[in-house]
Image (cartoon, rainbow, N blue to C red; front, side, top):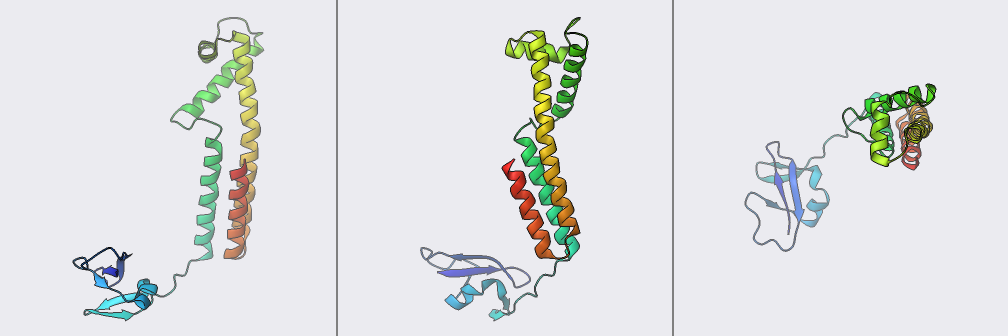
Length: 183
């Protein structure tokens, strides 16, 4: 049974094609096969189903660009999240950890072990020097990956922002998202 529920404006708000339903649900209007195919162009007017398509939605180029830029940023965030822990305060911890490891290394790995280097030692069982070096290697690896992500993000946003039409915006968005997804 094909049926629809119509809202206060007379437009379809829910439709179903379920041949196991009997009888017709309360408040629903049964639809013919042709009405089902055009269900979102229908309006219920004084109990009569009429074909009344909505006018096409016109989206400005600026709105298309804004949506593309937002999608590119979201995909860049997802790409970053594949490599770093995304949690409140974690980015600041990574920065401080790298600063402490760099300072410890610059001081010849002598003196008191900084707290976040000690935390790495406690977690891994490494020596202070090995923990500091590992932290710095992780920072270097992240800097390389972050540059790749940022390059793809910025190139995509610039291409989408400079596009002259919606199709070109979509092409730039799709290319940037594909590249970011592959990183």
